[in-house]
Length: 135
Image (tube, rainbow, N blue to C red; front, side, top):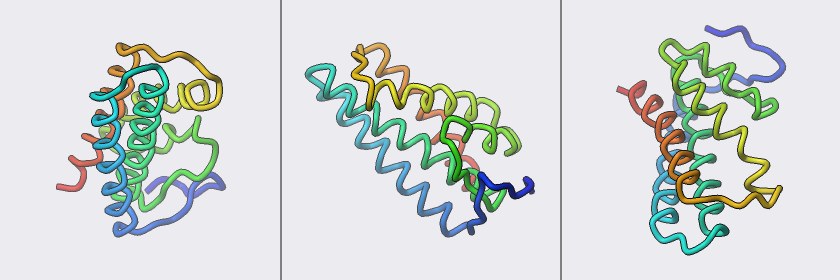
């Protein structure tokens, strides 16, 4: 088990299952929004849902294996996920999408279709990892 620090909090597996359900719902919303996006604003909304899916999926994975979730700066959340066995690719994907969160949601950055596709794909990587841990 990872050492509890000031940036983590203890949780149980029920919390992890709830966060996995959140991740699935956010990802469904992200994909639906991406399919119907008409402009950069719609694409930003879809990307935001994908980022939330990745964050919730990381919580689910960490809850399942470590009985902890990240509560500190989201930009560092990938560090806890890296401590889950096999979580390196998911942690890298999480780091990438969380790194784009502020620019997309607050910075007014224009989002292209290829960039949205990449964000959704990376968020799906984190969700797939969390799903695999539930079996």
